[in-house]
Length: 253
Image 1 (spheres, rainbow, N blue to C red):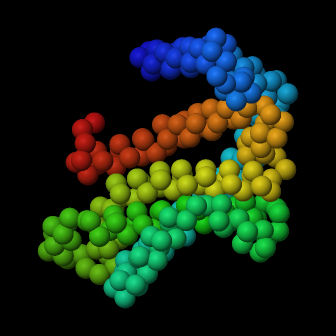
Image 2 (image 1 turned 30 degrees about the vertical axis):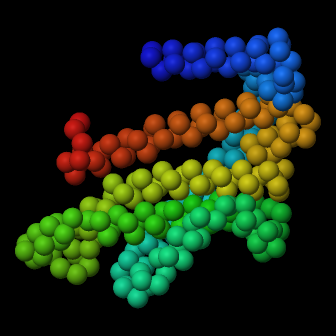
C-alpha cells in the first residue's frame, strides 16, 4: 500500500510539473514533455492494437536467449581466468576495459558479421552483459573467506572437489549480484540492437514514437521496460539473492 501511495504521489508531482511548465507558463511544448494522461493514453492504444504484446514477446525472446548465452559464457570465462594466475594477471584488466564499452559500439561488428537480423541483436545482447558476469565471477571467487577453504582441506576436500563444493558455492552472493548487473546490461544491448535493426520489438516501437513525434509513446515504452525489469528482479533475482544470503548466514529469514 505504501508503494502504491508513493507512485501516486510521483504521478501527481509529474502532473503538477506538466501543468506549471506547459499549460500555464508555456516553457515547454506538449510534444517535448508529455502529461501522465497522454502517456497512459498512448499505453492503452498500444495495448488495444496488440502492438505492445507483440513487441514484448519479440523483445523478451531475444533478451532471454542473449542473456542465457552471456550467463554461460561469462561464468565459464570467469572460472577459467581465475583458475590460472597468468590469465588473471593479464586478462582481468582487459575484461574490465571491455565491460566499460557501451553495448551499441558492438552493433557495427554484429551487422557486418551477421547482417541486420536476429543473430546480430542477440550478439549485441550477449556481448553487452558477458563481461559484467565474468567480473562478478572473478570477484566472487577471489573474495571467498579463506577459512572456508582451510576447513574444506581439513575435512579432506582438495583440488577440484574443494573448488566446486566450497569455493564456487561461497561465491554465489557476488555472482547473483553480477547476474543482476548483467541483466541490466542485456536490456541496454537489446534496446541498442532493436532501435537500429529490428522490425518488431520494444526498441522499434520506441523509435517509431520518436520518428513520429510521439513522445508520449516513447515514455510509455520506457515505463513498460521499467516494469518488466522490476518484475523479473522481484520474482527471480531478489528471491534467489535472499535465499543464498540466508543459507550463508549473511541475512535473516
